Image (cartoon, rainbow, N blue to C red; front, side, top):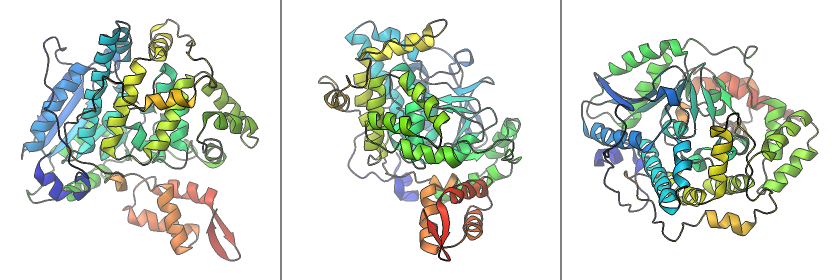
Length: 470
């Protein structure tokens, strides 16, 4: 990363000396036109162009994107980077796991090639996470797996009425990678644990309320947003944070409002949200199952969730839960290096090939036959091995410098429950005062009042004339 990035944004400064690898380049045989690059004034766009495969990400696409990002980072003419998907159905439905599964069946060489792909993908995600210019992702349509990796680490993540977010990896015998170790544990309460283990989907505005998206716009305005962003100009001495603030204000110009809560109530809210925190707070999957079995206040939800979890790979569930608990302490660099080790081990595990074939390649999809088939058979020792690199696997070398333990652009999302709690504990104010504070602080950002009201409805109580957090 250029030195000026460290000056304009100290949060991206590396916490330790870190060498970077040469930027990947295209190979002979890579697909032509699977990524389209365009420029309009100061805007540089990356359009994933495999609409028939829901823009699923492969090595050919990653190798094309890398050099463009590096080129634009050095260019004084490139102000903003936009990531989008061709067609009307998806930004990106994930990595091309069907191709990886077939490759794995070729044996050790194929498994290593699959592991190498994940190394490339994680390197790209890390580059986006530490980029020195504003990056915007249009999560317009299906945004899962690898598509989440291209989005979640960008300062601006735009959900629309067509957004379908999920991390569906446990359904195919894998784990929520692409930085899931970082962003999922940092979501409110245990919602990240719930989304990771169950692969629950968030549609449209729910991505905003949950903290996955930073903005919600109607898909009909995205072309106008693109045009307006291209017209933004920045003085050479303007720091990254000021540039990000300018982009944030521009987004607000195009909002057509959020769906009413009567039309689309917050999904992870109220009693369900409280039950998620109760049942998914544990560090062992068996304890989560036991809590769901005992759950009475949201019994119907608990039984449905138990059924969902029972169909998932037991190995995936246990590795994922360990990943999330450890990931709370990982920086963004360690996250991708650790996930590369985990991915390497999954490429050598039978559940990945079985899961992909059962869920994505069989017509109709069938229930996978997991190995081991039960949670009891997935011992602590088995899980431990996933967090150790295979003997022949070197530590992942990344392509950009920069590290942090909290997103430096978190302020563009709705306020987190932790931020609301801190304010309440410090001020001891009533609901109206708290809501007004966050609405004013956000510049009247849409969704703030609704989010803060929901949190306070669950957690704020008046005792002895004083407001308390419960």
